[in-house]
Length: 346
Image 1 (cartoon, rainbow, N blue to C red):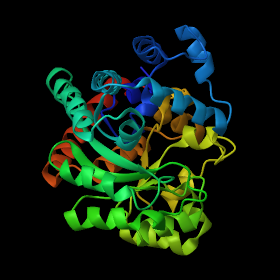
Image 2 (tube, helix red, strand yellow):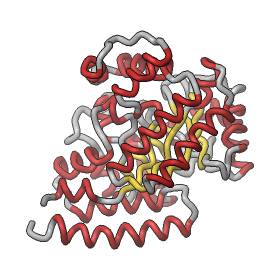
Image 3 (cartoon, rainbow, N blue to C red):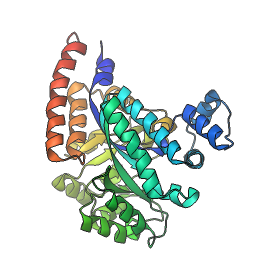
Image 4 (cartoon, rainbow, N blue to C red):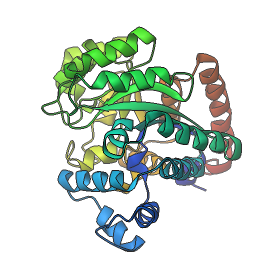
């Protein structure tokens, strides 16, 4: 037994993972064959090689190809089921999953209601068969015109209580400031729908300030560049705005040069509420379990630090307070038992 086996067995919560970005190569091949889409490779092994991250342009190419292979509600249900099975295999009890519905509406003509029904079929199956749960974050592509994004907000608002837990904002930060979509997020706020935009990844501190001030962010996707502004760090600390940190993603996309250079320890030392996440796992050749292993090995952390990250994710989730309290109690009890099983001789 070892810290690695302990990490694998830990109950977990994940708050920053993209459904479309979690499609495995074998599933992509199945979807492409089903929908007669030509891929750069025609075997799982070839697709795994193609998935290997090289640069941001290649990352975008993979993401666009993935999206093009998702054509029907059955496709959406398939990728959701396979994602949920993968989460269950990692002992991830609850995930808040980002999903870009507008792309499938505009490019394939799939009504949002049909997309949501497919996601909820997978959600019900996973709760019944696997004992895992998800909440859906319907996100706005920040490159879309600001006058169109309220449509996405309306979809998300209409699905409150039917699987949707938040409105998100993703895509290229540079040239697409948060303020562009202020109207959509104001609509969500008025309806009581939480807002969890990406900010401070490839964009700097100003992007995070915009997410807080213009969008009323309750949580920040990434936020890793907040350390560039001491006043922003103080704001995040004083308000305990959670950050969804994705170390391997940051490394692959050039936000940081290496895992050792990642500012995760500094964020924690600054008193910020930090959670650990995988973002687009197969594209970055990672999993949430691997993220925990990587930070433990890189920073010399043990069970205590990893448990704190997990409990931060429980507290930062958008679950009702009673469910958060149940998870916190159950996870704390599980940690004690697992430490005895996996770490007692270390």
